Length: 229
Image (tube, rainbow, N blue to C red; front, side, top):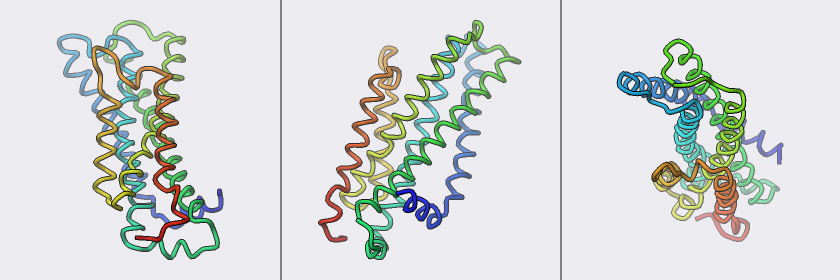
């Protein structure tokens, strides 16, 4: 499987993804500071350090779930649409393994980008706060550790959830459907009602992550038995 993933990495030109990830991270950090700057002129923009870091994590996850749908579109959907997948299926390897390799590469890139982006954005928030003091209170090691663990679990869950659009995109081999479904997932997961969000609890993201993997698997479970449409 690792050989297939390395082969896919050589095949795909990923410079655009890394450039986009850098730009997205800068925009996320800038947006967080903009919130603090505009809201902080009246009241503190964030109630605590935990709130600020959680919002930063939520923002980064939302951005890269959409990025993941673009990766899945390029790796899988477009190959089906352009019929280039037929050439790939001539290799002496199970079709399912080929698709799983593509999916795992998209998952790894998404998780890595989410994690690094969240880390950089959170560090930027803390660094700027040391000068502008827009977050009330004092940062405690316990709060930082607890929030960090929570963000790690939520990031892993979000990376798994980002595979769900593959299920919808494969139905009609549609790139727009794949991307639109990712946006819908972002809205559903990020929706906040009276302080409660699906992403604020640790157990729920873990369950959703497993569901995401299962749904992604359903999108290509019969690929060995069906012809390329």
